[in-house]
Length: 114
Length: 168
Image 1 (tube, rainbow over the protein chains, first blue to last red):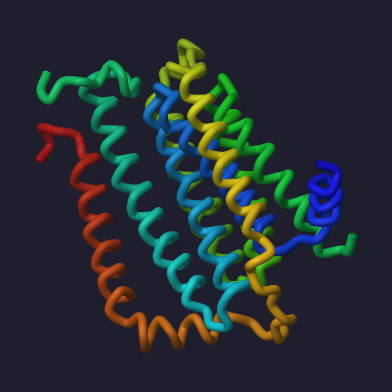
Image 2 (image 1 turned 90 degrees about the vertical axis):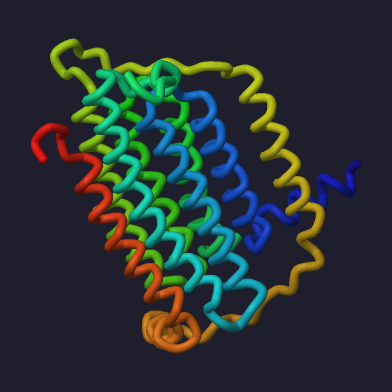
């Protein structure tokens, strides 16, 4: 156990790939938590954005640490493009739901038709 | 502890703390504004990973575009008069347990395997914008074109969906 802690405290200030991956894992977990617990549709979208950012950190960290090319960064560019499209469409749908049901609570919007 | 490590922990703290506020704040306005700091922190992490183009893109698109869009959504879907912009949560305890298990197992996996990852040499200090542009025009040309069509379709679709009914 002592060796574990010694190793851990030697690892902690020596930032490398695993540090970035752990940050992105925690960010991913927070995003999932926001998606499953929030009832407001806008906050669910914010959780989705957190998850996408976590995935992007992974792409770029692996691109920096395990390869000499920029393939990971190009993949991250596409993720950002799709995130922008997703946010626009999802916001339009949420606004439409609000006009129709007068709420954005995802639990109350369970009808296909009024 | 070198400057790189210190800056990494600064940006990691900004990112994770503001993400905590996003997820746990009762007020949706606070969530939206702390999402701003999350995006800035993530942009800082990109810059630390020598992805300068993506760091700038992150700020331009996420902060300048998506966050403003989300704020519009917040403002348009809440009755400002009633000042009722607090939102509820459901199933917090099981969600927290499952999420803690997911984050813990992922972090444990990353920590236990860090020795097998090769440590990279110092990268040349050149910018990545030119290389990314060349890759988008050569080996990633088809996804690039498809994503432009996706953006066009999303634009038209968003305008069509959000139009009020009856005014067609």
